[in-house]
Image 1: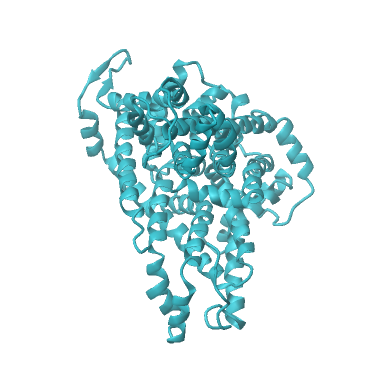
Image 2: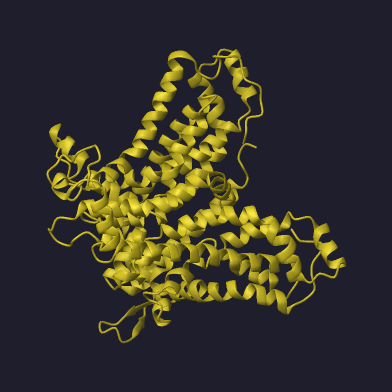
Length: 293
Length: 289
């Protein structure tokens, strides 16, 4: 796509793109290049020089049981966050779509958690389930259930999943509701006249027509769970217990800043970079092509 | 997205009677699930420490609201929360305004000029769409440290505006501006920057506002980056400062003050979302295209 009418000049447009180019070069291309470069070295024990190891860091990482475990943890965490937040959001959106009046009120009541930072969401849920003062954990104790996400790996994972999904419901709800409302009502009414019950209509008409929205949200939620949930994990579990909640992004931080293992951390950055690129390609290839329309 | 249709026969698709109330019940349960953590945080910010550390804590607000909030704002735990609020405001505004300005300028250049390396520059910017700051934290940290920008506003802001989403949004919008306007401006002898100020900028008002809402929330809610580069408590932003308020070891956290701080951290972005709901939703849809 090109403009037919343009202005003359060479220096003015170069001047106009200069600020963005400088910031992008200094804070994006240089660091990204550095990450790739550093991933090919290991520092010597005194930190004085770097030793070339080629793809050694990658070979080491891919055979490292902790890194593989972190991959599995990320896969589990990401799918749970996507399923929980999208499932609850779709349920609420279907309900709101059935109302003739009042869906706007519910929308206002449901959208604002989008504005709550993941790190704040983490603090709120950690407070509710705190082993000493938490309300929910106290009442669970009354029921005879001894909640302790500091020691129990499954409970730790469950808590970071709920805290991450909670803030994301509003976003998914908005897109699901918009998707539902754009489905022509005549189609659904025709099916209703033919005697199809709600569940049949949903399964055979609504859900297939909603598939572009669902697929788009799936990609967006995977990206969210991968990269934007650092705050939740850092505030609630710090990756523990026994690395049970150490997702890949958390491991880059833990190895690079806490462990000071720069070569490994850089190699992990490069692997994440490849994952982001794959996700972006998937998004452009499939989401743009709007499966049904 | 509005439904442009006549009302269907009553009771056929939309629910009446028991089903109607069940629908409302389901939605209200959802709203309560969303609200409950915030309600608890609010209650905790209005009671005294002993009421919390001897569980179960009350579920209805107490009378310590003023004490807890003023203690948080004035003295805080490591730094006054008022200072952290100011830092967050500067960071969020810096990111939103900075990104909008550089993106408007470069999108204008890319759409309205033919100049050397235009395609290259376009692709260089495009690549940055893909890589969140979380992925390149270690080398970016080194760059910022080498510039002596640790514990500074510019260190908080600049690395986060190096991304292309806004540039793309404005490019898409400028492509829809009718060519006749630029033609008329040229015939009238207007120079490019006059065209930019008098025509393009006013036309982009809504896009700018919608983008501002999204970027403000994005900047306000940053966590990892401020955590790395603000070691001085007086430079902490409020979202990352909350975690720093927890004592290390076995000491008991000052829950009322921490929860008051959490509530304070939520108010500005929530206010922006609810107060500018239409712009917010437009920004969401735009920025995900």
